[in-house]
Amino acid sequence: MRRIGTWIAVGGLLMGVAACGGGSTGSTGQSTSKAQQLSVGFVAEPANLDFTSTEGAAIPQALLVNVYEGLVKLDQDGKIQPLLAEKWDVSADRKTYTFNLRKGVTFSDGKPFTADDVIFSLNRVKTDWKLKIKAQLDVIDKVDKDDDQTAIITLKHPSNGFLYSMATRLGAMFSRTGVSDLANKPIGTGPYTLGSWKRGASIQLTANPSYWGTKPALSPITLKYFKDATAMNNALLTGGIDVISSVQAPESLQQFSDPNRFQTVEGTTNGEVVLSLNNARPPFSDKKVRQAVRYAIDHKALIDTAWAGRGQPIGSMVPPTDPWYEDRTGDYPYDQAKAKQLLGGKTYNVKMRIPNLPYAVASAQVVKSQLAQVGINADIEPLEFPARWLDVVFKQGDYDMSIINHVEPRDMGIFADKSYYFHYDNPAFGKLLAQADEGSEQQQVDDLKQAAKLLSDDAAADWLFLFPNLIVAKKDVTGLPKNAIAESFDFTGLAKQ
Image (tube, rainbow, N blue to C red):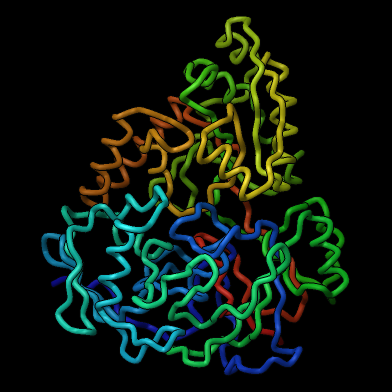
């Protein structure tokens, strides 16, 4: 057996969409004095608390790692580390994973965590989950146990992506008696439990007194949701919150320039801000029209105008933190003449249905202006996010263009599903992904580079920019991350001086 991972530390676990690494974890986290509380500002509020049936990043952002834990997790460098599994082994044929589970772990409903919960949780992905990403675990053939502390997962074939998928929401462990009301009552093994939820306003997480690891330094944590960037900025300026989780108005950073009051952290994410094109209906069922869109957009000007120069052009669905990243921004250099040539003198009127989120609204204005110069006239229609956008655009596919930040890690595979809202259909792309998953590590890199190139060549979408990890906080908050490369905002690494 080949040893893959061993447990290194307990508590203070690192990962997140705005992941929280470092920082003190020395407090028991049980005090509710003002010094131990923390309020964090967000824009996108969850529609409910069930990330097994509801798309979008807002739910795992709040609950993954904090309330729900998996067998493994991602660290700040994107490496897989142990969590509820102390260690694991992989068979020589790369098809059998044996996980040794941590002892003494209980769910917040008091039930012990055992291998039976691993079997239950992973079988539920196939039978109960509603999300399209659940297909990532179709590679699992069966889940068994040796004993209560040993879970055995057998794959249908070797898979480079399996363990990484287990570090996402797909690998979250659920109590066998705790799934009756996931939308309102999450029950997990994590360092926090749900304290209260004021819909439209806030979610409060409180320290889990029976947590198996190091107790978090701060409790309660209040996630406050704001309708616009100005309101969130004002809340930080006036002391209503301690942290802006993701700056939604980069041009306003000057307000927080006083180092005696505030700190700014800037790094990268794996969030691709995608200009989505509906490949299934005209005009974007025509490859030439999609290519014209890519030539018509000046990405540097867009980033400068819409996001105050913060962000990075990438040209593909692969962020620089992935091993198969290649700079594909040169595939479609800004060239209005080329765009017009591809359109053949025709003009098009299209519906751009976007979420009413600051980055999407700001980017849409620039895209509209640039496309108009080549003959594509876009009518912008902001939709309330998440409910309306998920229903109209994501579920019904009733749109021509949209703009959304795809924050899920290593998510290029979503283009392999022709029923996904892009409606991209190229069997060669899916074949490359399958080869990449089953091959050697080098084959994975080579095949995924080819897949990214094919996606770009087909102009399946346009990638406006890589969303930056941009956090502003009060000076006394410690443990803020530089990079954010997973789905969760992990609060356990945060503390106050």
